[in-house]
Image (cartoon, rainbow, N blue to C red; front, side):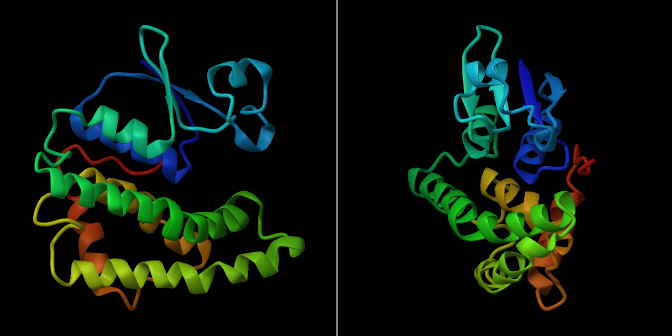
Length: 198
């Protein structure tokens, strides 16, 4: 399979991480978002939404949206809960990541890391912090009760939220007040097969 992505992107890093943990062989093709490489006619033939990550299977089928790719790659592994309620809880956390976490923590990081915090986005950048900390508070509360976001085992829910949480400082977020999140980050980074974001 071929995976198109940006190694600095948390959404793409999720895919790199699950491939490393499950030893999934693939070809990685770097895409420069800032150079508009997602906007070419050639790329839009593969993904009309013009976003990464994008996976192309050997048979030519394509799959986009990071959590969809993540869950597909984790099929038949311990990263996907077998119990239907636990599976739904995993999806709950993944929806939380995309709607309550990523739009704030990832976007603040993008404005600062990718764009260099330009003056015309400074107010927007600052506005991301309050809801971003709200998302971290939700995670901290859960992790007071469980080692991982669902229970005592790592799932795709954790990989989804780890991706941008572990680099939240690059968007101006401090994790100093979140000891449970810090411990959770350490647990994940110590798992056999773990790779760092490039």
